[in-house]
Image (spheres, each protein chain N blue to C red):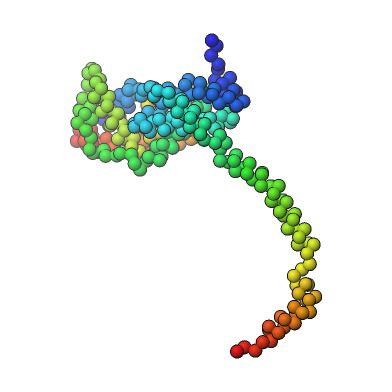
Length: 98
Length: 193
């Protein structure tokens, strides 16, 4: 017998043997219980919502940091305006090594 | 009592009445079970597939467009879930074409004898033999052969269900049949070549 014919017969026999559509008892209840215990939103919508919620706090932090930086004097200015601090620094630099 | 249509039930689910989804499950689960049983043999695997299909359907329900019947949309999810199952089990699937059972060998011996009534042993042998051949195929090819030759879907229908191109389906179906021929030839080359 030719192989193609054999495959045809095998497929025809399998086609006739239709799988059962039997459903286990109360299977729908099991699915509904699984649905109920899982979060309804998918991961992308949760991620998207989290991003949107993070927009306002992030903007507020950015504004506060920007304001603090613009209002406070620069670190180098304060150092150069403080003669005592400048002297201490100079002494530390000039200290002979033991 | 008037039975609510699928569309009415879907609308109710989307408006927050999740219990209506249970009616949809009861209505459509026999077909999903029958389809899943084409791809998985163990009953616990079949149940896992069906459960996943309905959970996915519930989550994606807001994306369902009511122009197409609900069962078409559900079958697309079913086919994709079955394909994922085949892909995930590709390496674990049993494939030992040379080690066929006596019942399978017997079926092959008597395959030309169409007059004989098919027994349960014959049906089981056919299933086992076909499982062996499909297990030897790539998941995509096994899926195409199942849809084309067992479910008797057209190439166009398969393309709509899977999202694969028609030309790719035709090429893969041809290639899968050649591969099945090779596997069968390995069983008893002196008899079938």
